[in-house]
Structure formats: structure tokens, C-alpha cells
Length: 148
Image 1: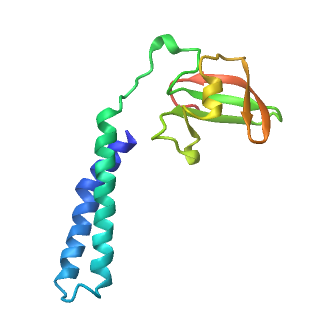
Image 2: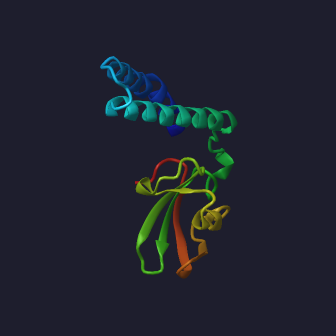
């Protein structure tokens, strides 16, 4: 899980590296005008804040594995291939709100497109209301393993 990997990276690699840099900067003397020291302390606070957030978030998150009974319908974790009104195809993965990543085409289960897709099957047509109006999509394929 991406959040767990981030927490481990921050705790095991980033924080020790920044702590060492702050320690080295502090050894140089006057801390009030030492930019490396000031920046390092600020970065440590950011890292600690993110570690606290991730730790609390991971305590309440549940990893959801696809159920074989879901095959053929769109639910959480599905990869969905859609065709829009102009004939262009799009592939999306429905993920939790903490995991969405537009670069990977991972959309939050809370997004309008994901909400419209839930429970539908291949060959269904869905409509999604967006700020630009109503959009229609046709479901071409549903998988619980990555679509290419």
C-alpha cells in the first residue's frame, strides 16, 4: 500500500537523513542565521506531521481485496475501461480517497465518475454530471487486475 510505503520511507530514510543534516548544521555554530539549520528544523516538523497523519490514517484504514463475487460488476478496486461520447477510451481504477492519483488514472471512490460506475456491468451506459454538463460513458471492460 502506498501510504505504508511512504510512512516507512519517511521514518527509515528521510527523517534520519534530515536529522543528521540538522545536527551537522547545528555544529557549525550560530543557529539564528544558519539557513541549513532553520530549513532542516522546518523539514523535520513537516516530516513528523506527515508521520503522525499517516500513522493515524493507517490505524483506521482497511485493505480491501476483491471478492470473486464482484467479477463482472464495478466495485472498489476495479479497473474499468470506458468509452466516451466521442469514441475515445479511458481506463480508470477506483481507489480510496487517500490513494487517488490522476497521473495513474486512479480515481477516488467518492468522485462523480466512480459513484456513477459502482454496481454497473459491461455494456452498461452511465451518465455523469460534471460542471461542464452531463457526460455519457459506455463500459467496455471491467477487471480486478490491471488493464493495459
